[in-house]
Image 1 (cartoon, rainbow, N blue to C red):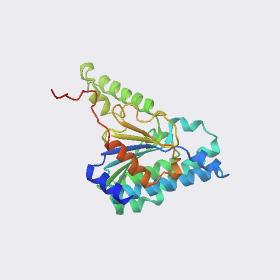
Image 2: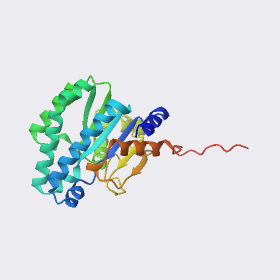
Image 3: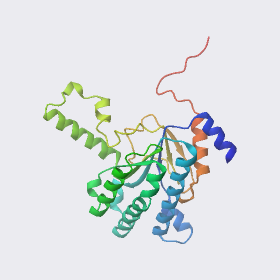
Image 4: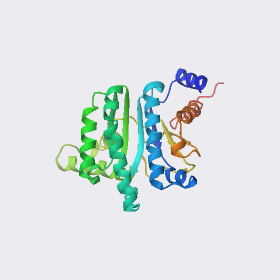
Length: 248
């Protein structure tokens, strides 16, 4: 991978990569394991990838879709396990985040999370605020439609309070009120496990993101897979709705 990695780095990596981490359950089922074992393997894959990005790749922003607003509909035992696993992931890696210069952000309806997890999240976000090496965003209880709805509610509140006029409502005004207001839009969205849909992830923000789908299940997604995705991204022409000028 070293040759491809150096070529990718020299060509300039995307500023922001967002990942829909999918396939934990299928990975476990293929091995005769429980779904919880799949989620644990998925957490290890996330840990491996964040370390690689922070130490070797140079991406400035990464967003991981860890728990969706729709995931609350899963069996309670699985939801409880997932949330406990995510809580532990954040708490156990907090010192590593600080030492590695990783700034953690969390987007989504945090108020729906267990109180103990809300405290873990709040502490981690505050403690890592000074990180400048990598901006890591974890989407928890997150949905793209819900994010846009919350932005609209904030705009309505500002209009009602006289802080904003109807003529001031613009794309920029909405973007500033999204959960992701502190981060740039993703350049590349990756989805693992062979599915080819957004599943309500960063709907507004991904309007002009490049999409990359892979059949690799999330627990097996390696740094080499990420490098291949970026290599594919670098071969594309991003026109943002414009048309390249034709000579002659």
